[in-house]
Length: 394
Image 1 (tube, rainbow, N blue to C red):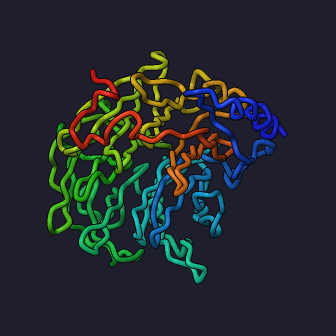
Image 2 (cartoon, helix red, strand yellow; image 1 turned 30 degrees about the vertical axis):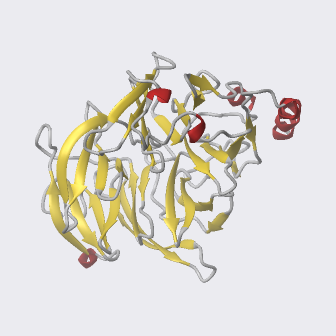
């Protein structure tokens, strides 16, 4: 097997222990459907990854083409994947573009491009792991995403086109279940820069009471909102741009308060002491003719890739020292799958300190372990003194 060959090739490198040597060790695939050529919309493919906590443990919600699977961080599929059964659009099998959930929330949202919206419910099984319990499908809901968050014991949903919506734009609902009567509209969101309807592809919770909402406008705007005491959202500005579209171009590392965005500008690193005024620290444009629309971060590592592109010139894992440095650039060419495009990834820091890159490559989902992982403290002091010089500045 090619994975074993890769591991064997890395043994001399690890044994040498050269100062500063860094590599990525691919593990066995969590999902591998690369040998299936006659695919349908039920075939497992991997497009996007969302991190979420249930009961204090972290899980990954995996976009598997048209359904969602729940995995533990060690690669175990903990419960049956969803059964939304959203029909394909023409000859395009995979229409699930964005998935949103929040920590210990029961309601999530899945956006199907051209095919509508699904609201799904997550509960805890007798075995103590999350599982899907029910869903409602709204074919006429014209959006490819949404957002969910919690505040003061209540759950809130941002969606567009649901039955009974008071306006043709995104609505904030206080939600307690899947029935129409379980959604109470509490706020109408209009585009804060241009007026008119506002679309939300996805978002991020940043800090205790701020959220970033990504809008699919021509500027790829990311709007900042503060959560008010009553759970509604107060617009506080549009401090940056980013993409949340079939995978994430904007990611946040809460421990370091660092955020990455990807797009036509390349990859940007932001320090978010105040979510309303984030500070741009550094920009990398590794391939100016492409758009780096997928990012992940666990300081001091940053990953980025170009969706649907293949090979080492389309995916990177950087380590920040006194300058940005690519970690094991050849690993992407060595992965042994027929169609190895770069869809999405998350960087995990496990309890033993290892950093795991969970990587989604269309027909495969696998983890790659960072050899001899370094800690953020090696390169900067956690910004406790405000010193961000180790990451570089524009």
